[in-house]
Image 1 (cartoon, one colour):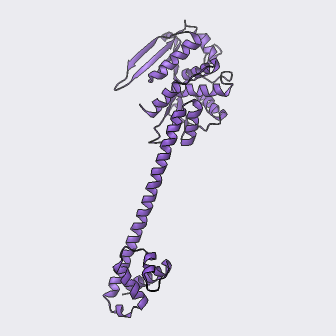
Image 2 (image 1 turned 120 degrees about the horizontal axis):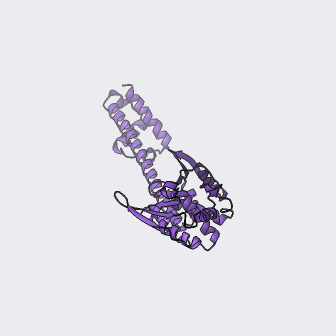
Image 3 (image 1 turned 90 degrees about the horizontal axis):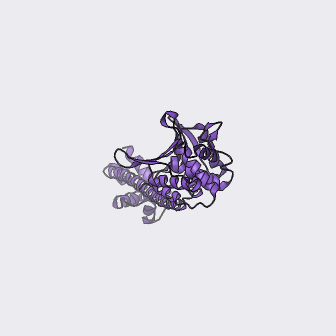
Amino acid sequence: MSFSSDVKSELCRTVIESPCCLRAELAGLLALSGTILSESDGGGLRFRTENETVMLRTQELLATLFAITPPKSVMRKKGTGHIYTLRLLKNQNFVHIMKTLGFWRDGRIKFAVDPFITAESCCRRAFLRGAFLGGGSVNAPEKSYHLEIETHYHGLARDILQLFEDEQLSARSVMRKSNFVIYIKDSEEIADALTALGATDSALDLYAIKVEKDMKNQINRRVNCETANLTKTANAAALQIQAINKLMDSRFASELSPALLELANLRLNNPEASLSELGTMLDEPISKSGVNRRLQKLITMAEQL
């Protein structure tokens, strides 16, 4: 199973005792996965999902709140997986259900967030939980950090964004083709959102994976830095040795001062030593900067040959 499926499975196990939160979650589910059917199709509303657990959760909410069991169909997708469909028929107290969920406006269905349905914080979070179950996804944290809820309706997207803000959860919105997407990209903000929706175990898993990734990245940065420093030191030493050999093969070798000659021989005999280490090997130890100045002088002399 994917991380997103694991999160939805955990959310579907959330125990809800308050009828108002049951109503809010069902409203979120139907708003994000519901399709209004035309009269030529018999009217009513069709709920569709690719997640069987979400379908069972929706059935449970409808049975608990309205004592109905809508017709269900299952269709196999190309490749793997299934599409689960529930249909709310007009003869199943359809208008009453739509009014109860806050979708019946001026004699027709309008998918939006009814302020009465989401008046309390627990109900706002329940609606967001239903919205995520119906139209949301979250990437596996091993790959990237991204949580989103997608809808066709601009007003609904605006309302959901406001619910996140009301619950002090950071979210942004963007238009993708003809859909509106509410998304979160920061790992800690995603964990906060999952916790608020009820997926605390998934939030802890995300934190654990983030810590592991951060440690690996830190180790990789340190290794890359040390590798770069070693490469830089090796290249500098090679340049110094080349210059010293050039000087030693010239008539200027006999003209080198004792201090330069001593350092030149130390460098030839210790090609892997750092400047600080070379400084401590001298009969009269000097600083790293002092060693660097002398080696630069040897390089300059070699360049003048």
